[in-house]
Image (cartoon, rainbow, N blue to C red):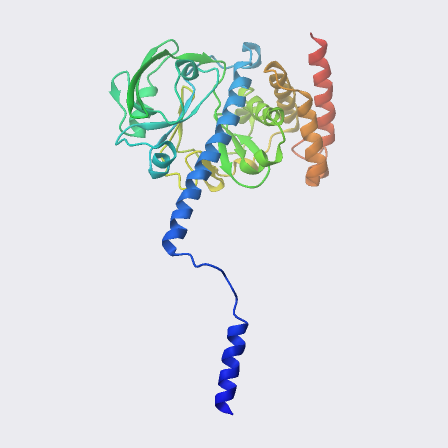
Length: 339
């Protein structure tokens, strides 16, 4: 009887065994993980290229009356240290240099023909074997300087020369790996979350977000705001060139972790500074050729799809979404009436 019971139980459990299909080895999982990291890096570079182009177009449209800053030197590329993920993404076989990951449209670098995946070997015959060498080299350039760039592209060495251009303001965009819908500025850079990029539906809405933060930066709101400090970023931003020294993993070279930027998303402005940012941000969007109506539409979407924004009242540090939406609509009427 005991033997029968054992046999019965064995047959029973075998019959109830979970069928999982073909087995997968640890090596196969590791290879798939590495492949996904390369794909994630490519996707994040694509997103950074998009927001960088939009931000660049906004900054080029700013007039001297809108900012107290002097024109700034500008080349218009984003570079990163080379690691195994960039090597796989761009099929690189180099031992020195930095890789170009973004070339901003309508920039000197764009006109010179620089491309994503180019490896920068030297600037004005100064060897670039490390990202810090790149930082030091570009920090010396001024508007109008002729720059001689030695690059490799698909195993071919090229020499490209271009003059350093100028831009009314230079506030590059940095992506943040966070799902919250948010954007902010420290006055030197604009930070936009991955969650916000998923929330917006068009380039016009991205322009509306970037322009609002850009207005905070160029109107000096960060200086005017009291009692707020943020952590400095590792990246140096010079001449419109963002440089990174991190290993990307799943793409950290083009997307910052939320923990790396301190409390920037918790910082508030006075109601009047927010209103001024709405006004000038809408003006920047209009001047750059994007649809200014999306500035109001975006606030309407915030109010409808993110109900917490409706709770704000006139005693809070930010104007409520309904008030901002109405003010922006009147600003649009004013701008269109000037033409």
